[in-house]
Image (tube, rainbow, N blue to C red; front, side, top):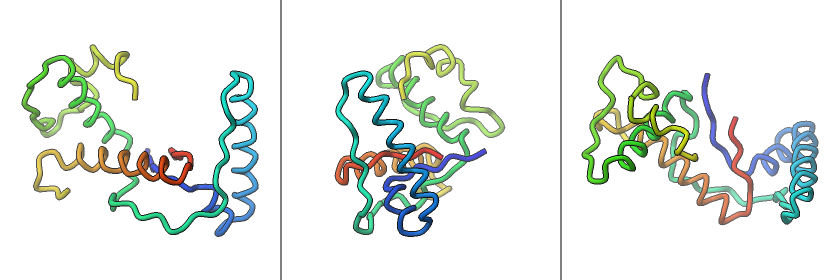
Length: 142
């Protein structure tokens, strides 16, 4: 199973898949009705956007890649100054004992670099957040 992190989904769908665009409009209407229940301002998702320029060349990857980044975060929070080490080959980042013990507290390159997975995930999330703020569009996780 994989994860794709995108922004501007409604504008893209309206242009390339009108039926999908209608469905996304309904999704945003539902989101806005839920926001209203909690007295939170409505979100106005843009229906037209200029071409978005992301510095992340990869925006989709296996879900397990997220655990690599979360592991680094958990270990850094537990031990400030900790020097990161890559997940050993054959081991699962999600099974790291520090990550597992602190995962309720966590809210949310090239392959020769030992941290290429962590950097790839961080950059894709950072770029999605940057574009989301700049263009006032939702981040769409698929």
